[in-house]
Length: 501
Image (tube, rainbow, N blue to C red; front, side, top):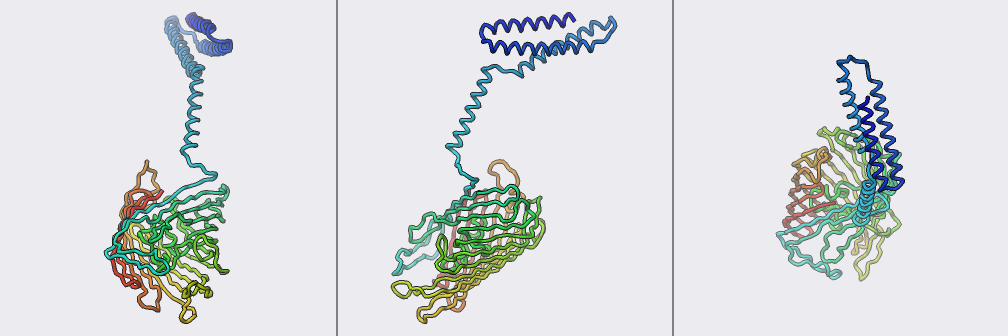
């Protein structure tokens, strides 16, 4: 016990000397803090000594020296633990001020990065886009003769050209988030441009401007969906019209979807469209959801993008799609059949005079049927569209009902793992993406007037797509075109590099 009290006295002496030295250099407040620390350490030391006294038991004289040695070792270990705890629990004022300074510097750095290098928005916002850079070569020179009304369409002996395909930038976000049932209110805004011939109208034009409200809850994958989309949007007609750029195998779009020779179904319309699905098949292991029924019905102006209606008649569009309810591993997965319908009125004009004159209204009707099958590595699609358009005939002063039809079929074969959703969902570091390739054949035909001769255009296409990043692909297409309207047959080689963000 004498050795224990000597340790206590030595500790008190050292601490007393420390207090006397610090008293000369510190203020009263620092001295009071050190006194409190000393009292706390002394209290802990006394408690440990009392614990050791309580553990002492009578031993023989032969065991007393060993007992004293054990007690001395315990007291020494206790003192070392107390010193370590004191060093761990307390910091100097200079160290504390240094931590405060580093924290303020970090807060300033984060705020500066946010203010100068971060795009800010009032609500949740996602910016995305796509850019297509392509080059083409034709083995027959293209000539477009100018006419009396528009001399800007002249193209003279052109075999090759560099072009920008679809250049788009979009903004998607949330305006209201429903945490209870997922009835969110979202928005979609997109601008874009496309190649122009003989004109300088290459500015960004408004493509999509929509408000999207989820009428039914969306928190569970195994329940149906129903959304209402108000604004300018693509028509829910067929497969080709609604496919995004990253999912289209060919560089050129199907003829029936384009204006001019086609029906212009890929042009945006302003209106209200309800989209939904029912009876979904869900595989949570593969993050797979496939509704058995998908539907869309809408009412639009029917005269193009970003325009007020030019008559008092609205156009109606509808689509119904049935998908076989198959599991993810079934060979029948993604086999679907769809029907589409579009009907409305358009203004007719007599263009024979110096100025166009109004000649009444005509019916516009589009009916479509499509088949879709995509089961890695093989896939096939087919789409048939039938159209009826009333046109004004100046010679007879009557209205002619022009009937047309279109066939578009695609066969493709995939090499690689990108097309398997399970591989895409794997968490990998940095910019890892499975390299994949897709070869395809497409047949595209349209007959502009079934009751007239030389009104067909046939296009046979062979192509290869290389996917080497999540949003990047390289496309190579070889097209053989037989245009009976212009009496031309030629081949076209097109290479395109597409990237998105």
